[in-house]
Image 1 (cartoon, helix red, strand yellow):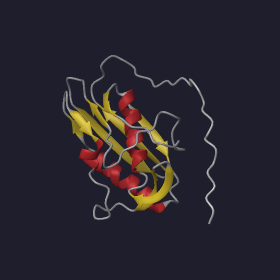
Image 2 (cartoon, one colour; image 1 turned 60 degrees about the horizontal axis):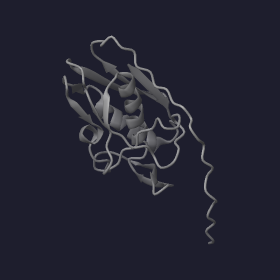
Image 3 (cartoon, one colour; image 1 turned 90 degrees about the horizontal axis):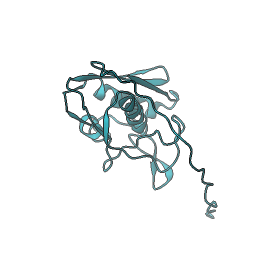
Image 4 (tube, one colour; image 1 turned 120 degrees about the horizontal axis):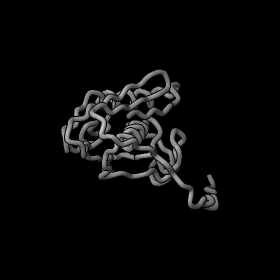
Length: 169
């Protein structure tokens, strides 16, 4: 299975963070009945690890932070994992809607929130994560299990945003 999302490559810090995280995932092999942890594979998003400043979401607001954009990698991986029939063990949505994926399809990661899934197949699965001009594609390679997995969503309710808070000064 594969999944692709797109980003603005003009946002250099964010684009570089996406490329770094993708390169760390690219080539990972999940053993039969093995577990994958995004934070375990990608590690801490620090300047020492090469990550740059870009927009992140903190307490419901967009602010600058090291590693901004990495959640697009985890989101793309999450959707590819769903299409590959992986069992999701840990997943967290953002507190705000993101523009690169449909609502309820994003997977936020942070120092305290991980994306984890389990390979319930009796064979190894190889992961590929490649960036290209304005996009990232994550693919799972392994033996077919005879099933076709699709992602569907049903809108149950749309909540209006809260009344804006105006801060003076």
